[in-house]
Each structure stands twice: as C-alpha cells, then as structure tokens.
Length: 175
Image (cartoon, rainbow, N blue to C red):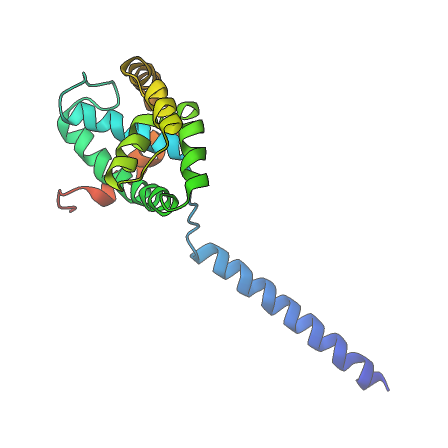
C-alpha cells in the first residue's frame, strides 16, 4: 500500500523538478525578441522626414546628422513601412475604408500620403471626398506635421528602436 502512495508522489516530484529545470534552461538560452508596434502615422511621417533629410530638402537634425545616417535609418524603417503600405493598399478596394482614411488622415498627419496612395491605386473619389481631402492636404498642414516630427523624432521610441536595429541594415562589413 505504501508503494502505491509513494509511486505517484515520486512521479509528480520528479516531473516537476525536471520541468522547472527545463524552463530555466530554455529561458536562459532563448533570446527574447520584442516586436514593438508603432502607429501608421508615426511610421509614415518619420519616413517622410528621413526622405526629406536624405533628399536635402530639409536640414539635418541632431540624431540624423548626415545623408548616410538618413539612408541607414530609411533602410531600417522600410520593412515596417512596407507592412503599413500593404495594409493601406488592401483598404483601397473598400469604399468605407477609403472614406474613413480620408476623414481621419489629419489626426495622424497622413493626408498627403493617403492622397498619393489613392492616386496610385486610381481610386475614384466622390466630389465630397476629394474636397475634404484637398482641405486637409495643404502645404500648411504638411509643414505643421513635419515640424512636429522634426522636433520629436530624436526622443521617440521609434527612433530608439531604429537606432538599435540599424546595424542589421548597414552595408559596412562587421569584424
């Protein structure tokens, strides 16, 4: 009788300690990869800022001092931007999604980008939609958005993440 009581106890105690050791080993050897999500507007606006610095249409900023750094950060942001572009392109066939994009683009400074995308996909807009987009997509609004991102980019989580990842996108040989 004592053997029958000890057998389950031994099985449970052995499997528990083995499981704990296995988990500890896995957590020590596994590298934790955290994927950070950034807003569509932040990615689009940051890419636009980097493009303007790279094209020398805008002065460099403290964390992007030259064309080389702008180019490297553009290569680093591109995979995230591709996902955003794919999502936006998928919305172009849905009139309600297009309408929502037009109505909310000013909130995240993406009206110019949305306008370009609509033209690229040859999306037919109603007169009201075109007028609304034209009202929101002004040079003054673009300058306001660029000024905002220019002043906040170097302190943003997006920049910190890109700066940490940029080695993976460098053309220089590592020793």
